[in-house]
Each structure stands twice: as C-alpha cells, then as structure tokens.
Image 1 (cartoon, one colour):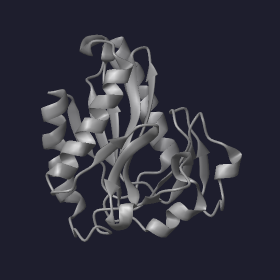
Image 2 (cartoon, one colour):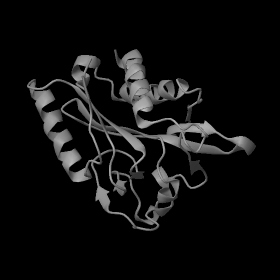
Image 3 (cartoon, rainbow, N blue to C red):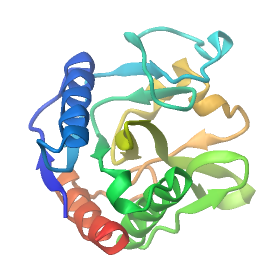
Image 4 (cartoon, rainbow, N blue to C red):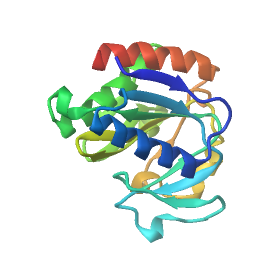
Length: 206
C-alpha cells in the first residue's frame, strides 16, 4: 500500500502542486514510495487543461491554472482533496483503468455512509440522484500522469460552502448542481470521511 498522509489545517495550492511534482518525480526515479495525500485548501478555483474562459463566472477567489485534466473546479474548506501519487508502471500501465478505479474509490467511500454515488456517461465525476429527477455532483476527478506516475486526484464534498461553486461552471456542466454530505443531511466529520476513504482505497487499489 502507498504511504498515507493527512495534512493539518489548510494547505496553500501552489505549495501542494510543488510537493506533488517533486514526490511524483522521486517515485518515478525509485527514490520515494507511492503516496496518498489528503488535504484541504483555502477557497480557490483551478483551471484544468480543458478549461474554457467563459466558465469562470465570478473570480472571487484566486484562480490557478493547473496541469491536470478537466475544466474548472472549486476547492475550499470542508472539501476533502485526495492527491494520489501511484506508479502505474507497477500497476499495469492503464491510465483509463486508473481513472475508473478513482471513481470506484469515491463510490465505495460514499457507500459506507449509505450514499449511492454513480457514474454518468459523458460527465466526469461522481453524481447523486436527488428528488424530482435532479442530479448533483458530490465528487470530482482530475489527474495528470508523468513518467507513468500519477498526481492530482479526487475531491469529495463533505461540508464546503456550496455557494462558492457558483463562481464557475463546475467541470463545464451547466445543467446540474453540486451537493455534499452535509447538504444530503449527513453531518459526518472530515475524520469520518478519511477513515472511509482509506478503507475504500485499500479495497480498490490494495
């Protein structure tokens, strides 16, 4: 299993990216172990490689261009970000399969709280069906691979301020909303979610 770390407090985004890039390079060189790193960020928007300028509606928080795949996303307090640095050379070399495994990780984490997370064709991330046919996004995925080592990863909404998502079109999807554990009426703690994430990760990637 990879090393597993949870950072205390709020981790500034630029430092997190620098740390990931250095760790991923060391993993590729064989000088560091694989790592799953759990963080919370101050309120920010990040623009993936497919981000469209029109999807930034209100730049009320700092905006960072980032090398991960995907479009605009929000990170902030109350959201658990899981940065996953794995050596895919040792794990079959299947990038598409890795993304499916990240989805399965979030789905299994949600299932531990009796939340049914689902994939949707043509829409990245993990979705929850709501009353009246509505579907809201609870988890996001955006990854980068360099020298067969992954970095960036997933985010899962525990109790963020959901109004902060209105400054962007999250992942380019206009016709659906976002949700969180607390929005679904589940007052779970970040520590509860961390325990579930670790157990689910071991099931999928162990």
